[in-house]
Image 1 (cartoon, rainbow over the protein chains, first blue to last red):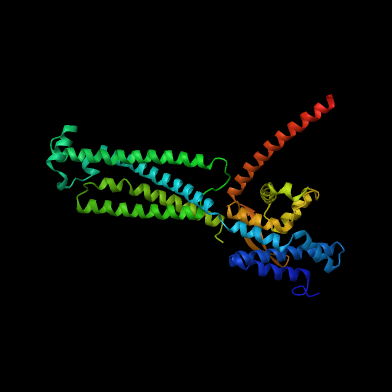
Image 2: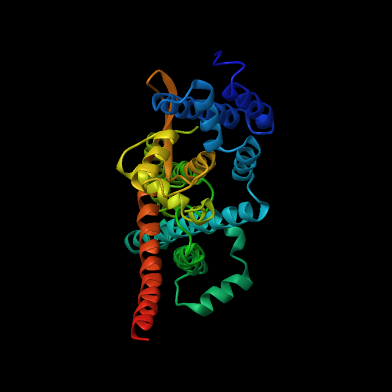
Length: 258
Length: 113
């Protein structure tokens, strides 16, 4: 018998080939290869049990199911409903947003330490243009300071630190919301981890390098004034980028991209 | 046992079989048949979309290997797959325990009557 052509398995594979044209090429190729290997194994097993080759192939096909049964299942797997996709994007967005916000919160802690050690001048700068009589009156009414500039510095430094800490708190709440949204789901309920890890690694790396550059620029160009607002963020962002890069490398090793 | 009854538990069955050792589709089906003494009446082709879906979910990873002269796609559980298996196994045990309790109590009631 010609195993590749005029045999029941050969005909079945011809039909399967025709039916899988709507599938992505790689999925179609894999399905054909797996189906052929399976059917040949099953037919060989039946032949070894005493069946004639032709009957063995028919038995293998009967157990395997029809092309009309197989291909729609595969199509259904590949098609991601819009609602599911929207949910995945939302949940991944929540997780990434929570991680980013918590990283900002952590940079607020570092900025607070820099503020305690180096004073308000080290975490912020106040351009002269904002020192209007109206603003000065407001700042000086809120705190005892030697000058409007000093009062503005304290106010802005305070805002720099506390707004970041507040964002960190929002990140924690978002993470709790994300955990709740995952309840009852097994495994990954967002986008593919490789996608989210890549996005997070890139975002943190860009943020880390950008803030590090601004910090170095402030150190060189402004004698360190306000450098703390950038240098408090850079190590956190770079550390987060390193963590996501390590996770990504582990995932790629463990689950090679198809 | 009909394919309909297996349908809702196919993921658990596949993960359980592959948790012991990596395998290709035909080997997985053979294992399922052997471990259930042929009780499961499964359409063999249905296993492949299920394996592919589990791979999409990150529970399985696959690689192509030549086995006995044929190119085969070997599936293995990832760490996420092991976690999913543990979760689904716990759910399954709770379900069977609950059903067993009800059935046992009905048997006891019948015996008393």
